[in-house]
Length: 116
Image 1 (cartoon, rainbow, N blue to C red):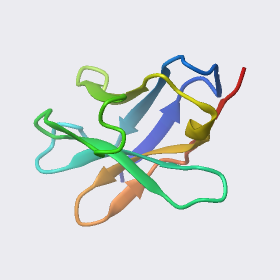
Image 2 (image 1 turned 180 degrees about the horizontal axis):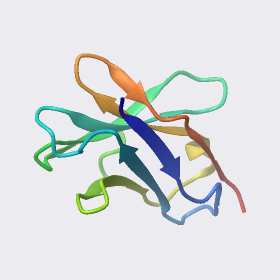
Image 3 (image 1 turned 180 degrees about the vertical axis):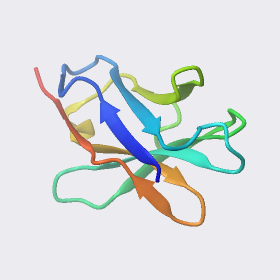
């Protein structure tokens, strides 16, 4: 069974870049036809899909976040990563990584607070 674990700083200053890594075990991120996503949930709000990196390395981003978001991967470590630039307090959220196929398999989530 696949397991996903998010890691990264819990506090980021405004205007800086938020960087998170998802470590995957129990399955390869290059296995056809899975896709690997980042999703966040701001306090008191619903889930927001941010973007995805597919098994072949192709990436797709939410139009509202595309200018600030980058998703990459390290196949040797079976990890994929999120970078969100120029953060503001509105980017404070619980950030989840997930595997997409017919359904979602989720990491436990990690709280990121943007504050000076």
